[in-house]
Length: 282
Ligand code: PAF
Image 1 (cartoon, rainbow, N blue to C red):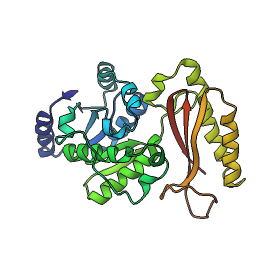
Image 2: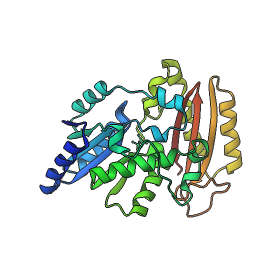
Image 3: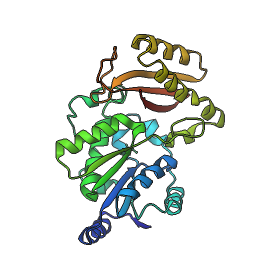
Image 4: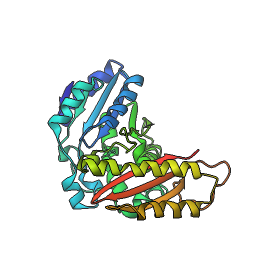
């Protein structure tokens, strides 16, 4: 596996691969790699000649300085995981100045209102930060295909919108959520949970399964109330939000309309660790 720390050498390498007509799949990450990331690489390896990844903890998408500071970082371990997985041909580990030549600030995007729903309400500026770094990475890497996890479903929909609006020649692929054995969605943030907290957090997935059972059987306000009740009884957990939203517009619904696809979204704090999950309802 090739490791690039400089934009220039990475670009030269990409150019050579392009000249040879290689199809490139790309999965950007913020490191602290886990099985969920491997599933992105696996999907990419099935549809491309070469798989590239990047590791960059993007400061502009953190609206909370403590969250940025505590975000797990372990490059050596990440590189071992990448080598062992055998899916990734090259990894880009850029400097801040490679991605932000004019200083650490976000562009301002209009994602047709998608950015104002859910995470947008609780993490102001988050999607401007994500848009800025993803746009820059896609311009630099120029992949044919790019892969993002469905755990951050709103991010996935917003990146599809970014690519559509900027007319970038890349196909965006969503990859299903990879779960731990107990159902907890894999996340770099899980590293910050104790063994007991990790086990207790399976309630998030179990709740989503219940919501799926209740879907179209009881009303949306009844489901919302039941979810609130579940988390009121959980010690050390605080439900930040739960909502059922239209998968296309991401707008919260109060009624299940025919012909629409719905997804349940949930964010729970387990002590100070913020866990996010979602499930398509059927
Ligand atoms: O999902 C992530 O890991 C990040 O938001 C991304 C897409 C790599 C941008 O920093």
